[in-house]
View 1 (cartoon, rainbow, N blue to C red):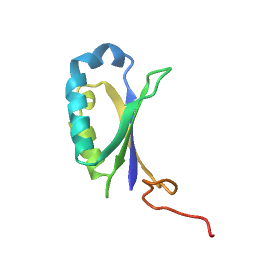
View 2: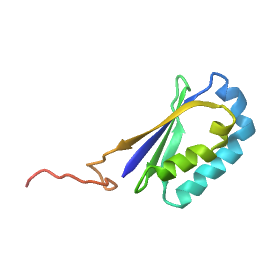
View 3: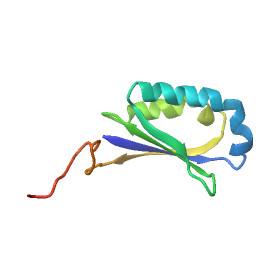
Length: 101
């Protein structure tokens, strides 16, 4: 199953993230190496939301990531939420649905 982790970031996120960015990126690349985190980044114009795409059997890996993230721990993330995403088209779809031939 795919999961989105949405981060609503603080108003001073851009000013404060430098202090915690290396630790955050280390955590993210470790999750990627384990095959959990597929893609991650911040939405632009405005930079107010982070979006992280996970692939996992459950939301537990996503919850563990958020709990360990220094951006969350130090208040750069005001709120976070997890949404399951049912993927049906594409090579990496977890529940592929093809039209009848």
